[in-house]
Image (cartoon, rainbow, N blue to C red; front, side):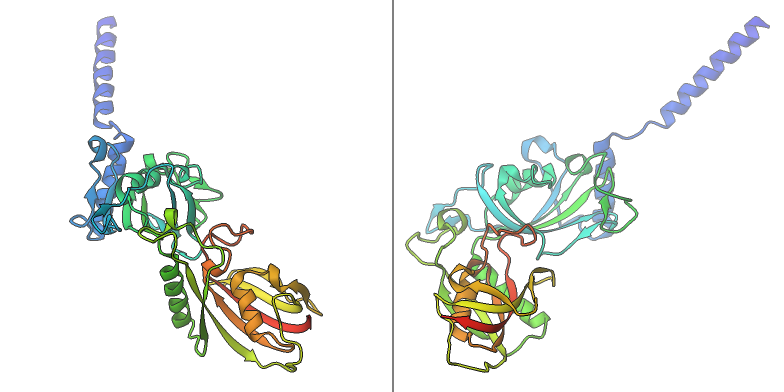
Amino acid sequence: MKQTLVTFLLISAIGLASCRKDRIQPTIKQYDQQQISNYMAANGLTNVMKRDTIGGDTTGMYYQIIYPGTQSINGTAVTPLDYPSQIAFVYTERTLDGTYVAADTIANHYFDYVGHIFTNHLPFGLQTAVHNLLKYPDATMRVLIPSHLAYGLAGTGSGSSQVANNRIAGNECLDFYIHAVNNFQTYDDLVIQNYMRDSSLTGYTPVKIQVPDPINPLVYWVGKSPTVHDYGTYYYKILTPATSTSDPVTFNSTVTATYTGTLFNTTDFNDFNVAGGTPLDVDSTIPGIQDGLERTGFIGTKVSFLIPSQLGYALTPPSGVVPPFSCLRFTFIVDAVTP
């Protein structure tokens, strides 16, 4: 009986060991690789995306350089981005399973040092990809980031991962698109033109003026001489003509106005539609509004402005609602003018 029991226990142990061998779990890198391989196959990306082999093929990221950026000017090589470099970019982000999608390129703006991307609550893999793969401040790329270089086992966000765009679950690989912005003058006008087209806005008058406080060209505009001024083009449309032209708005005026400031994704960041209007010193407004009110401001005027970021809040907006380098829409009604 004793021998039979020993034999039974030995057979059971061998059986359990065999079961454990059959059920060996993949490592997180193997799991990520399988998820990314399946995603690329399902979306026709297998022959489009390259595997990141910088540093001995250790990241597991796949990428596509859509536009390589400016790498030389008149035969002189442009210095690639480093961790202390400042960079401005727009991005989209999605999980490979589609449970989280952040595709609003009006809201998804980044401006800071390359080395701060991770500390600004974006994936460490994105920081690595910008430094090692994107490299230049006007380049564009798509990158697939494995979960161990994204938000890891814990994920990010709050609430249930089953609620779309509420939370990124743990072990989720990510698909990022990044467009680094270097020439803000060109970028702003493209954004405004697209916005007018998509919103069916017509009848706006363009006004090109010099940017009074230009963005540092040595950091943000590759190939531009520091002695060349920046220019921005804002657009305006008179919605209601003035009831009186006796008191035009000037630089030193104080206007009483009702107005609304809106991002191009319809998010209101300023809403001063109180009865009787709000006093506003013209010389304290952003450059585009200042010039626009001086050009169109009379009592009773209702005017719409489309303002490029360089004539708005540029790279450092005062409100957390307004992302850096955002184009803006304002609607003003001038109720009174104090010279």
